[in-house]
Length: 426
Ligand SMILES: [Zn+2]
Image (cartoon, rainbow, N blue to C red; front, side):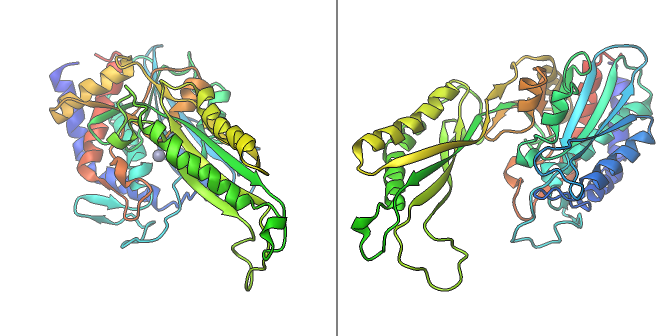
């Protein structure tokens, strides 16, 4: 592509800085909080109306029957597509429209889209409405410049990424929206920082362990069998054996931050005995059940079955060694790790564009947590997929989340340039 074309494209995006900010604010002001999955349809239609006015064909797909879907909280996704001058590859920008609840600790209104100090603040500013806005402005700039390209451009706004993506990208991938020949390259503007290309994520396995016991009067615990003490034994083994073992499992995946470049386990929740929300004092009872949810993140070098076997091994050992010990194990959620080739077309195109726009080399990273790439790779069987967006990873889900306006402008320039490269525009 000629230097003139590039320069004109970059200038147009720069000139649309205020519009980019306004679009980000508009998106933040639609409080698509998940759970429960509020006002998804409003947000999908807002994106759809904007793109339809620029010549995109729209489809709205509701994931009926997906977790959380109801007439009150419909899981509404929007897919917009515009064709180039002749057949060719398709570049798709996928952004999740849902945001996590605001939570506490904000110094600004989380759903106002406050602009100050060169930043837009709000829930979802970073993760990832700023990224969605940047991708829309990037694509609009290509169209306005009238740069001829082959193939097609797609933008989707999808739901429920924060809760597994089953009603969003997972649903669409099953319907063929993320497979060839419809789509060839996917960029997900998740917040991984403006100069980094995220090629994948670690695997995740969530499980609930329940230890079993027998009820008795609390003054005579020897007549019962305490499920909480059994869980204490499980925790002890996790603490003294498993966690040190996980820390020694290092990966060649370039995971950021550095602390996540190994296997990890989070004890997500633990509960045993009488409900915490009871009225009045507890009564003296030996608990017959204790439940713990664990969140295990693992590496591409690890076998998913071995990850489960580590936990099962500890539990089976305890069943042999510990009188009265019994358990049940329930899988809550499982996603395999995924990693795009370091020199795949979309990786190379975005890295080259980062070098051009920012004047420094791109950094390849892998995300510590999963995102919708798993559905695109595993269900859609489309491997040419990355995350690239303007937000700062560490700010995601935090109070006073923000996105830098310069970063949004730069990332939009990167997205536009990489798109034209992938579509072979001259
Ligand atoms: Zn996200």
